[in-house]
Every structure is written in C-alpha cells, then in structure tokens.
Amino acid sequence: MTEITPIPLAQLTTLRTGAAPERMLDATTTPDLVDALRDTWARGDEWFVLGGGSNLFAGDESFYGTVIRVLTSGVERLPSPHEGRVRVRAQAGHDWDALVAYTVEQGLAGIEAMSGIPGTVGAAPVQNVGAYGQEIQSTLVEVELIDESTGEVSTVPASELGLGFRTSVLKHHYGGVPLRRAVILSVTLDLAEVGDAGRIVRGDQLRRALGLAGDAAEGAVPLGWVREQILRIRAEKGMLLNPEDPDTWSAGSFFQNAIVPESVALQLPPECPRWPVAPDLDAVTVIPLGAYDGYIAPTQTVRSDVKVSAGWLIEHAGISKGFRLPRSRAGVSTKHALALTNRGGATADELAELARFIQARVQAEFGLLLQPEPVLIDVEL
Image 1 (cartoon, one colour):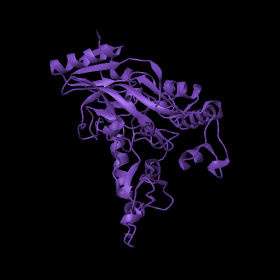
Image 2 (cartoon, one colour):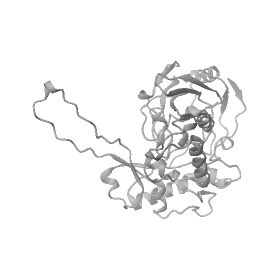
Image 3 (tube, helix red, strand yellow):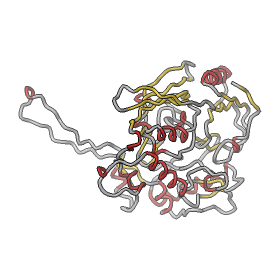
Image 4 (spheres, helix red, strand yellow):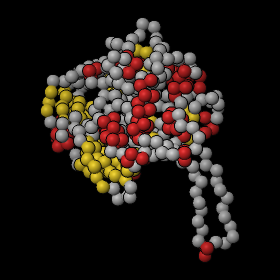
C-alpha cells in the first residue's frame, strides 16, 4: 500500500463533489489492499473504499478518516463444473465495463446487457448491479472478501450475500449500516460459452430495449451486437461517462426503482411501467404413488412484488428532464429523469436539495418515498 497526498473526492467521483479526506491510501495489488484495510482497522479510523467513484455522493466537508483507493486489476479464465460454461475471476479494482467487453470478445454470455455500467468489479455484487432485466446475481458464483471484524480473508458463495434488487448484505443503505462489514477482493462469474453463435434473448425487458419483436425462439443474436445496442441506448440517456457532457456528471440512476406490493402497484396509473420481481411459481407437484391418498392440496395464489419505474414517477410528478431549482448548479439530466447531475461547480448541498425536492414531489403525488441508490458519505437527504 502507498499513502498519498489526499485528492479531493470531487476529482475522483462522477458526481464531482467532496473535499480531500484526512488520509488516502492506494492499493494496486490484492496483498496491498489487505494490508491497507488491516492497517486502517487497527488504527480505528473511519474508512471507506473507493473504486470508480460512480456510485458515491460525498459531502462538502472533508471526510475525517481514511479513503482506500482500490486499483487492483486482472482477469483469469477458469474451468466450470457445468458443461458449456466457463468461469471468469476478476480483481475488485478491474473496470466493470472492461470485464464485460472481455467476456463479449471471448464469446461468454451472461453480463452483456450490463455494458456501459460505470464502476469497478468489486462494487458490482455489493448492490447487485443490473440492467434491462439482467443482474449479476444470475451469474455470480462467489466472492473473495476480507471481514472487518476478523481481518480474515475468505471465499464466500453468492448464496450467502443476501442478493436482492440493488442490494446485498454488504451494502451501505441510506440511514443504516451493512449487515456484514467486509470488502470484496475478487469476483467469480459462471458464464455460458456461446462463441460467435450468440444467444437467444429471452427477457422481455431486454428484448424491448433491443427492439426485438415476436417470439424469443426466432433465433440467436451476436453478443457484440447486444453490447453495441446497449452502449448506444445508454449514451442516448447520458449514462455513458463523457467529460464534455454535463448530463453524464452524475451517479447514474440517483433513485432506485421502487419495489412495492402488487396491491400498491395497482393503485398507480396503469401507464406507469412495472415489472414483476418474483419468479413465476408455476411449479410441478410430484407426489409419490405410494403416498397418494386421493387428495391434492389447493394451489395457493402468491402475489409478487412489483418494480415500478422511478423515472416515470419523477416525470409525472412534474419534474421534467433538465429541471433545476432557482440559482442551483445541480439539475436533472436533460436526457434521463432519473439522473441528478452536477452542471458545473455544484456543491453536495445543492444536489441534496434537489434530491429532497424530487422525493417530496413524488411522495405527494404517488405516496411513494424514493430511496437513493448511491452510497452517501457525510450527506443527508
């Protein structure tokens, strides 16, 4: 590890806010990262790790503690116990989109719809990143991590991470602390080996985004084509980082799409986009012949939760693309209502004021309180 002169977080985060912290360490290898974390924990410092800075909203005051920059990188291809599949292990500091590009080039399917998502590999499982119906939990096998409580390094299966919609046991939720305080060192994915043949796109959300009509069985499409289309869509929405475009000076989607019971979703306008988030429980019941007594229990109706579009709620609460509060340098993206942007020199207070205003308007109109998606450091909404 290397202790460096602290750099203002405004220079290291895509929202461009935050002063220089008290202390900053760089870790370029996994042993460096382990040493930096153990040293910081032994000192009793407040701390957080910083990857790509694309999911962090830092306050205007200096963070009184240690910031550890995760600069590790590297990808290795491993055998999978499943036929027709390959495992890929990537270091926590590796650029996420670079990993997606690598898998597409190698003909490995499973994360291509998540092209263009900024940030690092280690951050991806923490909030179970996803896009267009594809989430990392669908391919995640395990992570290597180090726990703050013990300082020990271990390999943890995905099943123990509590993965849900944009969440895990490792995530700092607004107003709370993670259930498990630990830092990911590497991530292992299990991907389908499809080569140049591509794969059939089955998810309705992804098919709509790609403009694929009709039955999913019509044929496979190349992974490279899927990636190109997703990158084009994200660019049109201002969701690809561009130093010349203030619409991209954001943390991506600032608010999470709301997850509500089906009964609540039914009270929203029918035109509000929504997607079920629970699996279809159309399971086959198998009763051994020797145990069959002529009675089959009636099927119970299970109502699923529903994901509703936060962007739609914002726009229909009267917040248009490009909206700004008077005399504020923070504004809603001109391309995407879900992105709060720094239009140049905005303070964290200005962005927080805009976020609170949007929350209040949506809650007044629809009765739902939108929750922030970025990790908030010394900022309150």
